[in-house]
Length: 167
Image (cartoon, rainbow, N blue to C red):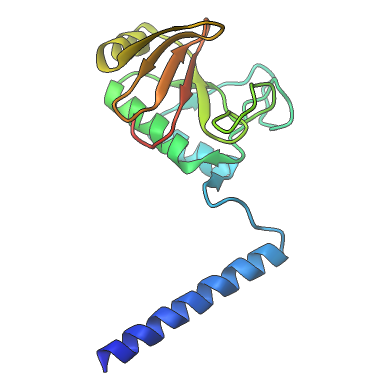
């Protein structure tokens, strides 16, 4: 009897999930499963004590002087929150998913990267906790976290590539 209930429950959940996807797509709500909204990201960052700044004082993804989190991956948000907690440093994000960055699969636009303002605390933590990769010509000094995520000191900011949500 319980195997029949389990089968029915599984079918019902599959039907509900398929219906939700179909309705969402029909309403134009479909987005990659990994992408979250700007408001969701800012809510999580604010709760974690992470600030952000924008030279244009805006959050429009299509304006290079704005700092937007529209379409950022949840793993990227989780990663920067994990980094803040592990390092104990104040973190200020200076770039997210807005236009004006290099394109590619693992890009800002695709939600894999954030830039953060440098500080002595951040420099000390990264250089002590992560493996120095070397100087990457045209980019900067790069460090690899045990998670595989990359931290590159690009002059006036740290460019962070989050493959995973670990720091």
